[in-house]
Image (tube, rainbow, N blue to C red):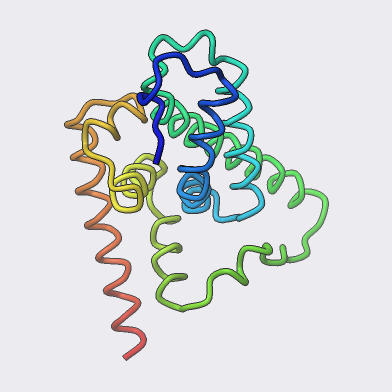
Length: 178
């Protein structure tokens, strides 16, 4: 795999092409964990790549382009969730009918995966983001702190609380199944 550090003077096109080939799927999966919609996640990641491309000449440290992309994906996922909440509020006012499940439901093929995703969704936003970055992307505490703009101590706290809540949620579901 070629990285941004392999050549001293990458153009925006070259660098983003390499980053896209190496990291697009993982970034989409990260966004899916946050927004629970494959199509929206793909749009979020694509928009993040376009934003990085447009600002490539302003990046202080092109070596950190992947970290910038991760942060952009998390921030744009948050925006997508906020937009979804606003749309849902307005839709509820217009109609009392039930909202049909999204197209991403077909991707949730196992009950356990659905339970984990439901448990993640029930977590506060910051805990969900920390757990997704830690356990899905295997980022270190320092990388998570940098991506989310919080301290390492806050990362530890959010991870601990989120994991405990998720364990409780999943334990309750397993007991109900028996």
